[in-house]
Image: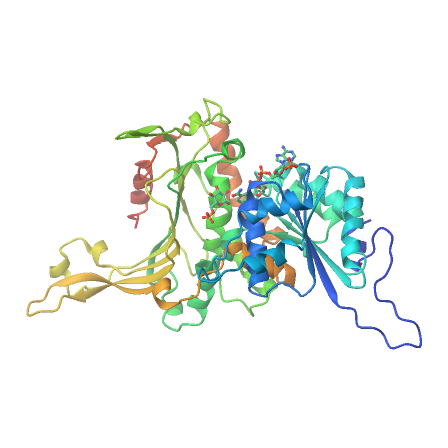
Amino acid sequence: LNAVSLQNGSSPGNETVGESSFYSKPEKVEPTISITVVGASGDLAKKKIFPALFALFYEACLPKHFTIFGYARSKMSDEELRNMISRTLTCRIDKRENCGDKMDEFLQRCFYHAGQYTSEEDFLELHRKLKEKEIGRLPNRLFYLSIPPNIFVDVVRCASRRASSESGWTRVIVEKPFGRDSESSGELTRCLKQYLTEDQIFRIDHYLGKELVENLSVLRFSNLVFEPLWSRNCIRNVQLIFSEDFGTEGRGGYFDNYGIIRDIMQNHLLQILALFAMETPVTLEAEDIRNEKVKVLRSMRQLVLDDVIVGQYKGHTKGAKSYPAYIDDPTVPKDSLTPTFAAAALFIDNARWDGVPFLMKAGKALHTKRAEIRVQFRHVPGNLYKRNFGTDLDKATNELVLRVQPDEAIYLKINNKVPGLGMRLDRSDLNLLYKARYTKEIPDAYERLLLDAIEGERRLFIRSDELDAAWKLFTPVLTELEEKKIAPELYPYGSRGPIGAHYLAAKHNVRWG
Ligand code: NDP
Ligand code: BG6
């Protein structure tokens, strides 16, 4: 079987659904979707995927006919899978409402099949079970690969050969990491494309499903006030900040092979940067948006070692409580040089952004949890109010902040006259705090992305040329860091991170927000 036959829907057995005779009117066959979560016993499946599927079901966003299958090696009955996932389902959509009945209804549509990831036989068995549920309907199939990356290709091979839809579509959601550098990522893409077409591959970056990230284009392209400011003419620097107030807890084994640059910067922060900086797309169609993202990524300068600093958290005791170092994790080698913190200065060599530093900062085990985009504007020329601000004009510049999480908000720092007889100025915020403005809870990123994959909307998924462009920017510096064995600057767990991040910003005339 090859990618083309998959798209046409031919696959093992090749029976057609809903065939009509020459004389009878063709019967309208209703579609059904079978969603298989591969790696169903794992952390991501329990924490995010099943709860997101339930939330979609609860909101009546899933198609009328659907079945969910968990697939993993662990032995489990359908009932055991239901028990396992029921623990993480919540009625978060409306906390006052008792959604017990809905949960039962949802769980009755969840099943489990135990199998090996490399066994075509086991996937054929899954195929038979899926078929039983799909009888009389047009079957569409979605596979979610919630498994470690070293088995992505095996699973895609087995699933595409033995369990793809015979007459509907088959799509596969692939989780990050998509390789660890240009070469391995290219190899992964090449292998996946032996079995799937690009259209069938949905590479997920869950930051693209976050409300504020999706809102970036709306903010820019539907508000006259922002777009004219959106260039080197008015913007001094842009900061993309990710910080977590906990360490790699439980994921040290995975993390040590990747580090923070690959885990957060090359994907989540770079995706935000691309949406922030791209030109206006021709339409809102997926290909038009992704074309613009690729264009801006390809206009970027390769990152160099001089513009990167790395850090790693060390143990720290505060009062009676002590916090572990990264290397205290039993799955991490004691001499690990893997960065848990990094800061980098990136540049886009095009007419719009020439000379504007895009600073990224990402770290684990810091003092706070937040993800933000901060846009610092230029100084007001010939500032009339110099006297009120002293010589520190940075303090007087406007700053637009998009707080992706927690407490989603968009606020603009402005200078304002303090009411009264004198002429005293202060910094105030024009503040759009989501929870004050909107009553409805914001959906989890995985809900939006799952729904898009079900509906075949590719706008928020990464195309292979985007991925290549992203890796090209980071691969040389990642190789250099590893070859030169650059030691990360240690910072205490729960601190603001290494001081080097401030020197890097200062080198580019920037102060972190
Ligand atoms: P897990 O390590 O929990 O693995 C998922 C399942 O895969 C396990 O339950 C296990 O199932 C099977 N598995 C684990 N290790 C191996 C192995 N070495 N060989 C074969 N099978 C194995 O992963 P997560 O659920 O944390 O993550 C899944 C994917 O999602 C990964 O690619 C990860 O990078 C990505 N991701 C995870 C996030 C998270 O928060 N967890 C966030 C973003 C991305 P069994 O033994 O039953 O077969
Ligand atoms: C994942 C990273 O992609 O994103 C994790 O692998 C990180 O290391 C997580 O913790 C953060 O996601 P969120 O949605 O909790 O900010």
